[in-house]
Amino acid sequence: MTMRAADRPLHILGLSRTLPFHSIGGMQAIAWDVFRALAQQGHRVTVLTTAIPGRDAPFEMDGVQVQPLAEAAPERYSAAWWRASDEAALRLHSQAPVSAVLSISAAAAEMPRFRVAAPDTPFVFQAHGTSWGEFQSKWRSGQPLQWLKSLKNLFWLFKDARIYRRFDHIALCGDVLAQQFSSWPMPWVAGSVPRAVIRNGIDPLRFKPDAAAATAARARLGIPDASPLVVFAARLHPQKGARQLLQAFDRLAARDAAPHLLIIGGGEDEATLRAAAQDSPHASRIHFTGAVDRGDMPGLLAAGQVFAFPSLRQEGLPMNVLEALACGLPGVVSESMRPVFLPSLGLTYCEPRDPEALAAALAAALASHSPGAAARSRLTPEYALPECAQAYARLLAQPKA
Image (cartoon, rainbow, N blue to C red; front, side, top):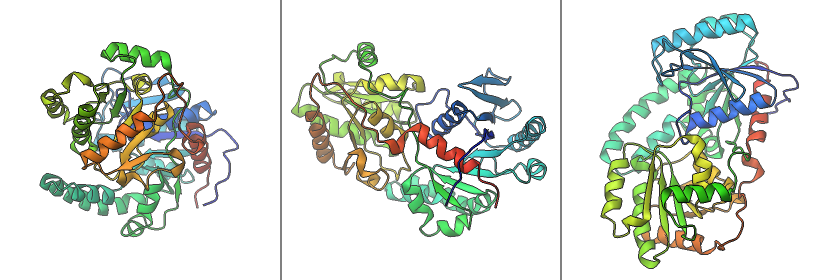
């Protein structure tokens, strides 16, 4: 689709059921980066979100006005959320007309009174994945529990068909989503709603090679400066591949007494992973951070030499890989991610369920690192946050059809 430039400041109303103040990544982090980048580019950005414990009053962060809706339970859609977000949008629109609405997933799916009051205001749905993609990932897992959970995703396909058609545009956060939306059954689910691919963007001022931060992070973790370090960062969920990485690291460490492994993040699988690491003959070289604030991520990533993400899922466009590349780390990722990233990123792909192949890929990536060489960003311009935000501004400036 052709998009005209946002040649005037916009009043953008964002809606998200949660914000990433204590998150290492995920769609909330992607959304927040877009919101603050739009604000930095001169647009007025107000974000409505569910209750934030300890922060009932509106506040400003990174140039973005945030209004928590105290009556809406944190981090979930509810009747209170649909009612309160509609009322808050009406109030904001009466004070300063809203130019466009950016909905993180289905957060702005309702808002009936606001839609009547602002009939010319376009609504944009930011899509990070699809129910069909989730259904396929769970069936590929080979786990009966995941198969059972996939039935909910199948049911959501019909709800998605109703939700998508309430929006004027769908912003697809990556090329693999464009492929999904062009393949059955998504053309039927999304109907004729126009779609535009806007790849997730990384802030090069925050995520960059940083020798001082890397040294400080290693000192905190007890990892010698000279030791090769493989880094994993994600929510610790069985489908994210941390177990597979532990198995591969055991093989890597058996060949070479130098490498260490850093696992960043928390989640439902953390206790199981820590127990598995303790049983490893190389336990002293496996380090866990637990859940970390997003602000700590650049230094932790910069501390490594290689980033590994052997996810078992069909990922959309994972930020952790892009952030690691921006910090100068080569990436070793699952073969299933080959359609996700542009070839210009130079990633290494391998089968996550083959520990020998994964260990070999990690060893090769570590061997390519020259000790003492200054790290450089491996991110290409297509994934930079300023360009991403400009693309959103152009899309949000489009008039309703």
